[in-house]
Image 1 (cartoon, rainbow over the protein chains, first blue to last red):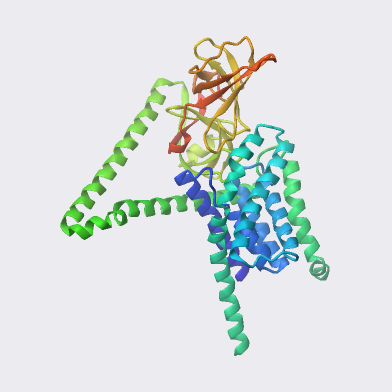
Image 2: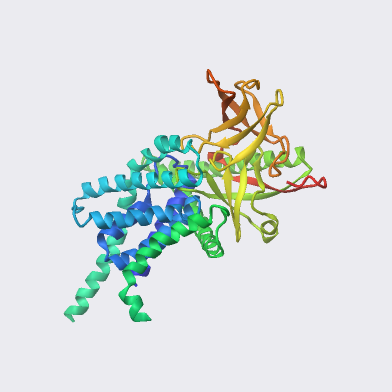
Amino acid sequence: MRIVLTILTGFLLLVLESVFVGTFHIDTFLPHVACGLMIYLALQKELFEGGIEATLLAWTADLLGGAPPGVIALGLALIFFTIRLTAQRLSYRSVLVRAALSIVVAAALQTIMLLILLVVLGDLSLIATYLLAALPSALTAPIGLFLTWGPLSRIDGLFQQRHKTLLKE
Amino acid sequence: MLEVLARYRLPILVTAMLVLPMLTLVLSRGNPGRNPVDRQLINGLGSLETGGAMAVGLLEDLWNDYIALRDLKDENERLKQEVALLREERARLIGVLQENARLRRMLDLKTDRPELELRGARVVSADVSPFFRVLRIRLDTDHVERQVRARMAVVSHEGVVGQILEVYDGYADVLLVSDPRSQIDVYSQRNRTRGMIYGLGHKRDYECKMGYLLRRDEVQEGDTLVTSGKGGIFPQELLVGQVSNVTRKEFGITQEAIVTPAVDVSRLEEVFIVTGKSAPGLRP
């Protein structure tokens, strides 16, 4: 139930991001909800559960992204595993550190996408887009993290509370 | 079998997460379309996006019509109500007038180019990646949906918007002129200089580049560019944009020009899909 609720919430946030970007023409500074989701799932979830949720949400982001199929899903999967691996050595407990992490993650995602696209499309003019728009857009990634972290941690809290109560009984 | 799956669940997950997208990416290199499962999912997402867009629209109306006027209410309740009512009425009338003007201009396109078979569609959402310029449009009826296919031209009363990238049940993705994957063969209206326009993918603007121009080709700022009709997607003489800057290097046999598209995509609400041309043998 928790997995379903987490996926549905992530799904809804991704769709809302797509609608808001379309309605208000927020072109340059995107909230990067998908990055926020990957950070939460990598840091707060058990690997298998987080992995399943991350896979489904990465593919949803891929379907909404307008990119060639698989580009965004692959980028997000790489990000999920990188955070997971680095979390064993680095502490991501502070809110400020997590906000900084979201900027790094969004910038990394844009870089991964650029590299994949350079290989697939071979268009060097994409580097200008990367430097002028994609990379600066990472600065607003903490918004996406804030939007995702709150609802998802509430869902987890709800189920943990329930679990504790059941144990007491 | 289940025991094996349970034992190796992590390696299976890691493989699925990394290999599946890589495989999709490699397989889609020759065929950029989505697979049937993706298409069904996109169809479902499209409905959600439409619902979301309507909900956001309602919230926006609510904010504009009521909440933003709350301060005035404190000053004078009666006047506030009157003002609110008048503003609501006015906003609605302006909306209707703007829509009317927009539709009238769209109708002008139908009158100006009677040979084109045009089908209307409404813009639903935009992509969320800084690298691409794609719009999702809603195809309102089954009748329209059956006629729309990938690589059909999408236009508005201002000019060329882009081309259909893919059609899902009830929705279609439009590859905008400013997307780096888009290429359009054009002529300069002034002297018929021919070139190719391709998108720059900038998120700050919708600018494009005109390439394949020989150094001797005469191109200057302000030149109006129209489709050449070559390539089979866009019918001839559709407005694409205006040259805003020309770059000639000191050496080399070619030159480049920056082009501002004729269509302001950020304000686009309705578009036309060119589903055919009445003259036989000239179908786009």
